[in-house]
Length: 98
Length: 98
DNA sequence: TAAAAGTGCTTTGTTTTTCAAAGTTAAATA
DNA sequence: TATTTAACTTTGAAAAACAAAGCACTTTTA
Image 1 (cartoon, protein in one colour):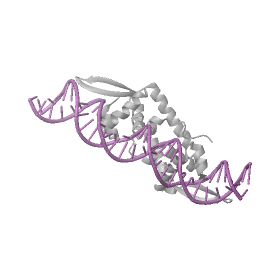
Image 2: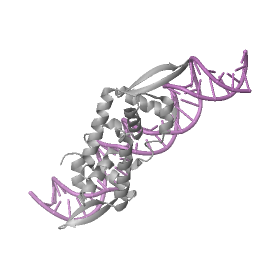
Image 3: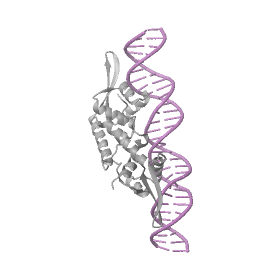
């Protein structure tokens, strides 16, 4: 029998990064504070998970302004979409035996 | 919007415990060494994750013999089945928006 | 029958990950 | 001018993951 967990992506072991990705799949662009509120996280904690996802090139950061106020938004990359999908496929395969 | 990750069970954040449960859902009983081989783990690592699942009463241990050789097997409990299902439901709800 | 090997752990110690709290910079508002 | 907000970074502590070694017991092999 094949190792059922081998195809899971380590980056998505974290519930928070999983949550971020699931939000980004359905929202083209989302702000730091929106994510923070949705996932109920502290600034530092969210920032570090976003950083991990950015390092992996699964998300992209957009620094801009709303009026003259800074605003940081995030979006998923093609690579991110692909990796997330692969992870979900692996998950599904694991449990599809139900 | 509701926090999408709030209903995920912390115990199943671990890929290994997730793997164990997914195996136990489809196998009434499985041995220590079988699990070890399937998931490609060291003894200590597997034992400690099994211990976590046992503490949570998600799995049950059976110590017995095959012939005169000792054999330890594991099975899922009703509570474990329920918790695992709830976790999968929560996961599905997160990503069903696809 | 003595040595080797297997089962199923526990213990130890290191590495990795997670997280909160506090500090920071710059702009906005009161 | 003082305070607040945004979006971090840094620091440090706690938790989790993991490998390796040790162990008690039994069985198999030489």
